[in-house]
Length: 305
Image 1: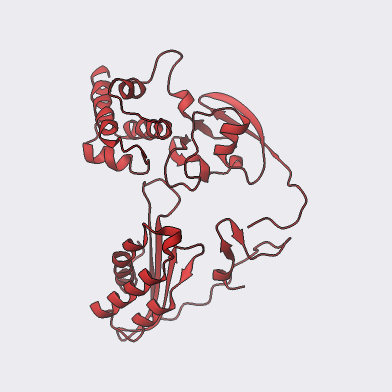
Image 2: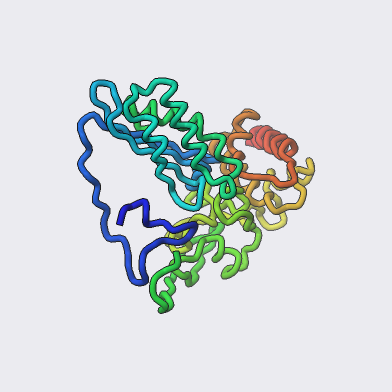
């Protein structure tokens, strides 16, 4: 099966019941070949791409003789954009060829799937083709039998915890539905909004994108672990004092992300705070108070050290 034929849509593949992928066959690369790939993500430690674009080129004498252009996260499945490849083949990657390839990428996007994303592809398409030229590297499960649950032993907020998890259950599902830790909120379910942010061994992640079985032997940090008894974390207290929260859906994830930021950088600039919280969406548009609260907390914590 061609690799591009495996996905059938979000959460679905074209594998038949009982089939699994056992290997990938990669053809030898012709001489003069190189590639480049970029995924645009709203935070540096987030696994889901807002837009992904890859370009593979083969050149002889400075002329493109073969090309493949692939797009991700802009339609129900990964797209191979043949018109973009055709625009590059036979060219020396001049501005006209790059713009034609970028236009083909924009046209290939499904606006109903990712309406806010397709405008980013023009710039990406030009950059990835240029980098490839330089050689830069910048479904439903088969069968009907129920799958056995796995016993997971982990630590959550410093306390040992054990639970049973289905192989396909997310960490978010287990936290909320199995362990009753409902402080972690479910927003988009696709890693775009950051409402479900937790830490795994100190690394900031979206729990909707992490399988529960991956928690085995790990240290999980959730919003329930920020306060110490009746004593709020300085971030929680400052958010209350400065009204840096509105409906509250995004707030737990913002607090977890802000704590992770301050643990790595106790003296951030406003720009660094905004970048650190870029993966957390506030649908009530309360960003300014959030940023100010984080900056004031950082200053207060530095004074008490």
